[in-house]
Amino acid sequence: MPGITPSTNTSGSRLHLLTVVSPRKGAGCSPTGIVGRHLARQLSAAGDRVRVLAESDQLHDWPAGTEVVEGSISRPPLEYAEAFDGVESVFLAGAVPETVGEVLDTARTAGVRRIVVLSSHGPEYEVAYPPETWFWLAVEQAVERSGMDWTHIRPSAVMGAVFEGTYPATGADWADTIKAEGVVREAFADGGHYPFIHEDDLAAVAAAALRTGDHAGRILEAVGLPISTRARVASIARAVGRDITAVETTPGESRETWRGRGWPDDGIDVTLYALQEYRDQLAELTQWTLDQRPSVHEIIGRRPRSFDAWAREHAHRFR
Image (cartoon, rainbow, N blue to C red; front, side, top):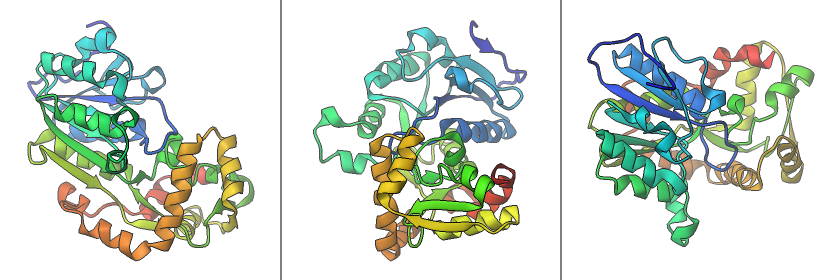
């Protein structure tokens, strides 16, 4: 099959296709590369086969045995249609409204049975606006109309997004300023909070949806509890064994910092809004997270990983 690095696993196990795109800084864009690699490892460990459709900068560092196809899920599927051959389920990450209909037609024709969408917390807001302005809701509705089983995953921010350079902007420059100065400068540093989920936990939610029909026709809120900016800084400080000073800046100062790192205004706006909203409505938003069913804990069968654990895993990147 042209463009495919064959798997060494030739068993009759089920085959999943994961789609991966280059990092995107738009509001709600999760790190498809980081999550995809965790998901590939989990599926392979469960005895399943994994094929990845990845953009050119995401072709490397996949687990042994992963089949890799170069292509972009954001483009029409004619150039990569054979990537769907023999696939049972698709982890649809990075799809765009302009081409998602063609992608789904190709998947259905190839015999795909299940689509699991890596979505965002956006559809519930987009529904109030004209359909021509929709992004996440357009993708979700196209999948729902496809005739295949579907599950939508709407995650909170992913801890590892800070390294892949995807949403949210908070923490985007921390590795640089911590290494150079032992300082974090950010808006709402004194009271801001943000909800985060460990990328391995998000991958485990996706694996559960891909491997069983238990979550078909459902929206899974893969949300972690809100964490204060100062608590995140303290976790990293403990992990690196070094004092780190958190300095509160104005929203305008953080905006200029993030713009300088390539962040679009929509991603900056949502980041600042969330930091403030979680500060001002912490109890209510924490309770909303606790009330979600099924919870991440229930879906993956273990307690979600903490930011402390994540910081220890990545301490070398802050030293």
